[in-house]
Length: 315
Image (cartoon, rainbow, N blue to C red; front, side):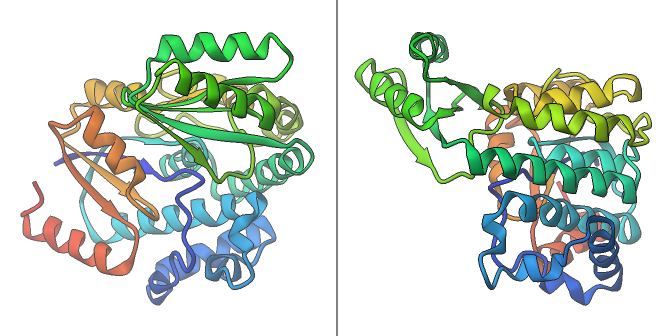
């Protein structure tokens, strides 16, 4: 079964994520090595006893480490045919680490820096985001442009599926856009999101500029399987990876069309989301409904999936 792996993005984190998986020696060693590489106590962050997961600088390394630990377990325990990979924003780092595009230690150190730079912008730049269901994308984009022209930035930040986009910008800009979108009936529903910042908007360009020198000093390689970029919609390549990852912070993500491209290019027959929650699986069911869909976020789900694969019953 040719499978497209999906790696969770920020927002999927959950209190206690990965703690039950620490019973597996390979997963535990992955988390410990990631803690060393990032200089963070990732187990403490995963436990989230003091709201550590509320901080971007904490959640990014922790979430990627959990997804990467699950991937390593799958490689050990199955002969899963991985057709390709895609992550949502932060999840691209998990995909690049899993595919060999980034090396473990230097890649995680880069990711920790990314989290710190994004945290700094979020702390000093009040911003907001809102999800729009069944949007009239052209109308939404036009309304955002009109509001931005007045000095309050707002734009479409995430094209998740053809049935959902997310807008982001200054707090005032998003508030004005929400009012205008509702008045114009440009979406069936508008849902304010609890986020650290309006990622993937121009507000986070300073973080991208800070990240660029770190990227320049980080070794990169061509991934061993296709990893589709949210930014370009094309597979990552070593030659352009640094530039794309630097731009990624301040430009929209295109997960839905990226997933469609991955399936078309690789002939994937199923998707498997690695990480907390089922957000990307829900997107996949919208964009590639003809595929089988799986997710693994804890030890019980992992064991069930491995049993299906081992017994040849996964469909």
